[in-house]
Amino acid sequence: MDLPIDPSCVKGFLREDEGACLYRHARRAAQRGACAEIGTYCGKSALYIGTACRDSGSVLFAVDHHRGSEENQPGWDWHDPDLWDAEAGALDSLPSLRRTLRLAQLEETVIPVIGPSNVVSKAWQTPLSFLFIDGGHTMEHALNDYRGWVPHLALEGLLAIHDVFPDPADGGRPPFEIYQLALRSGGFEELEAVASLRVLRRISPS
Ligand code: SAH
Ligand code: MG
Image (cartoon, rainbow, N blue to C red; front, side):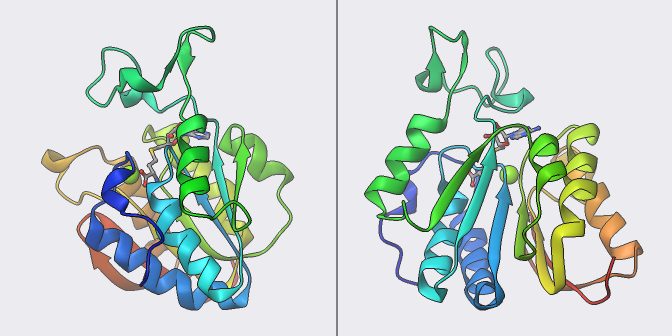
């Protein structure tokens, strides 16, 4: 893996070993078609998956409304005042994402799609070879992401989910719940687990 920029310079919530795992699986999966991630923030995961797409001649659609999740709002643990847009009175991580993509020379590989995940998923048509879910962490958002995006995953496509915490003491449950839904559906087998990242392969259609 030869990343164009140092991932530690990009704000975000992904460990280097998780990023390397994303790269490895996306590199292979992307040979079969387009990739998507739900929840991009400043582009840390997009740096790994986008580089994999670059190396495989594919593209990554990076879906995010860029207004931050609950935990990114003022007064919450993961709020970053540097990302505040005073005129909008709202968080805006898009300028930071654009900067990441420009520095990494990934502007022709990672295509930002700016809007609410459930609105975009309803209009989506392109089959996906690789899907990374790392968006809102409420049960509503996690379920929307699972139900809205997993149907677009091609057979043998890979589903990666971040922030899967089997022990509730380690973090919120919704990503773990959709991971369990995927496994219990019988449509997926687990390929790898690194920290809170899980990578599954679709083994049967829907
Ligand atoms: N993958 C990123 C981290 C994503 S953080 C990294 O590697 O660092 C979660 C992101 O999900 C936030 O940027 C937030 O704006 C976005 N998000 C939360 N709920 C969303 C929704 N319903 N639609 C679109 N984006 C959403
Ligand atoms: Mg995450």
